[in-house]
Length: 297
Image (cartoon, rainbow, N blue to C red; front, side, top):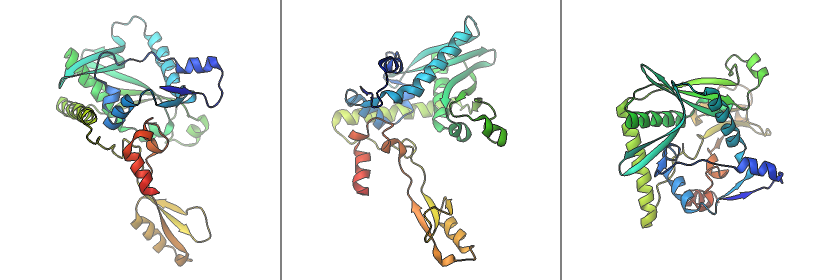
């Protein structure tokens, strides 16, 4: 990876932010990689030495690492708690690994906790990837140790939390740390999910080796928001209302009693945020994204 410093940060800051001792160990895929897009994984591995990332992009991941260390140090010698354990499972001729932040051993089964430094938006709306990740960890524990898992939870540290918003709005997170319980799937559903994820990643790797097209990223993997429909008025730049369907927007205009003929609906297509802002790191080599750009042009 090529690391840039477009903001001219001091060398000590650059060094601190870019230190990284992460390793997936001797495995074909980590859980984090497995739940992500196969296309991104293949392209990243192929262009790893060409990928550019600015030093400021490491800030929140390093902050997260620091919080992990704080919590890990606090555990000390407790026989009922296991921190940062990396587990390995052989499945479909691959080795899958995952490092679990915290496991609490109870007579009824293990409680899995994962630390996330995240946003208010993520806490309020949730993320499918969190459910996928923690159930993949439960699969790892069951397959590698034979132990049952009792509960899954995310310990969220909210980086943009505001005390005033919490005071004014009861639906806003009331503290900068939140515990979110994650649905625990059945063993059958976990097995089915992991078999599917391994299969699609193996297929993508095979396609790369044979020159076949890579599978496209899904809208969810591209962080693509749904299309929206803005109710506009002639002579006004900002939308009056933004609604989820054209019918809702048309109904809104129909209910207007004054100057109805001056109102119209403007379609706003959802954009693949991850691609456009290159959060994946590989949009420059992605024919799916380049095709989107060509079609828009």
